[in-house]
Image (cartoon, rainbow, N blue to C red; front, side):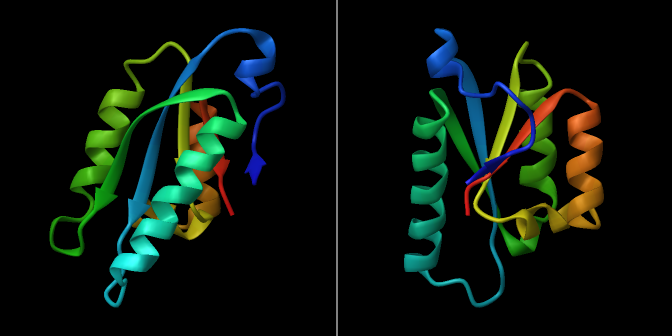
Length: 114
């Protein structure tokens, strides 16, 4: 599990950051794969001492609606964290590495739980 910003273990610092998960479903995604992705996010939040508020799941039919909803709530937070099972889930908004960079430039900590 990797975090993109230093000092992101809020448990060790004594404060609780609110985190939001994001999963982008793919065409052949089975329920067990979705459950495993959710578990990765939950485990990553615990490892970073963050309070997991919600997991936004992107449905194929409505993409990128869940991503936009996610950004709307995350941007209201003072401390911002998005947890995703794999970087490829950010592909909904373009090249995953570029999306990650844009989000980080807006003060959002991106945690990739793989």
